[in-house]
Length: 414
Image (tube, rainbow, N blue to C red; front, top):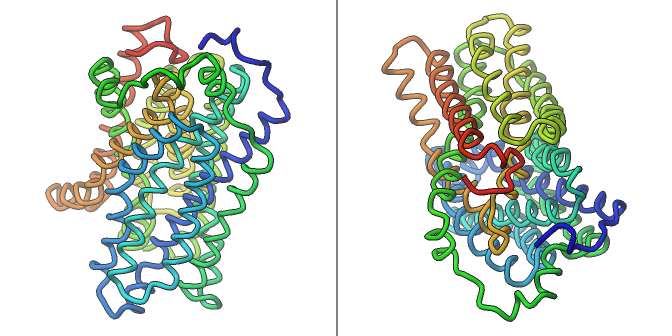
């Protein structure tokens, strides 16, 4: 669909789309992190071990690609808005039902179903926001959308302070308040003008290609996108999963209050980085903005892990998350959306993201085994794994930019 064929974009409406998409992703991420913060409480409640309850986030991770595919295909066929509302409503309901799970088995089943909704929300929300804002806004909107993830982490951290009052079940009920974002979308956000325009031209009357057909026709694009997102997720999870409780607490003996303070600071930095690099991508192109963020990450790795003072560890963590979770990731929604074939724009970005996430699911295990093999603590393993992932992101994005210099804003597939 040529840009000239689309109706003019109402900027007030576009602002509502950006706000709603950010809110949906933030509350989705918040509900996910509530589980991670309360794992030991859930284990105690069901009289089981922490290792068994760890199946909950694992099942959520495994089912995310299923949600990305199912919700994405539904959004490509029936529209972004109704599917996004349905997805948010479902994960909000599942969050509340999890609070009343009578047994561990029921709880685990619900967390697996939550993964389907979690996997579907990001891709559908990305397609809605990228098709509903002016092209000159896409970089900034991308950064704001992705900032919802660290913002959700921050919100979950604040909610965790209520644990002594509400208990873990009360926090899950509170997490069900995410449905407010679905209500906001229903009241203030219209359907994607791009999707409506394609439907008006008769796209709905023509057989739409299946995902396998699209994959066969765009095999190089699919391989590139999944490999890139796997590297992105190794970079992201590699810098987050073991860092607070294992590295800072157990190896650097940082007090819990200081760890909380550092987590707040580096998540604020991630939010800022998403906006800064999103704006930068509008000026120099998506691929080059990602490459800059990945390149800056590598020399910062020693500052992030080698100091023993809380101050310098904090400086390193803030800089790393500004570049990784904010800088590089902030460009991803716009980049994947613009790379996607139009007929699967709600399916392709989310599915590539979640398949890459699934590949990176072994990150924590790999880092701990690497640390044991090196025998010098977790710091070298963190630097090596995150550094290699950043290098892969840098090489892939620059390679694509070289092969397709006309597509630095992602208008053509690699």
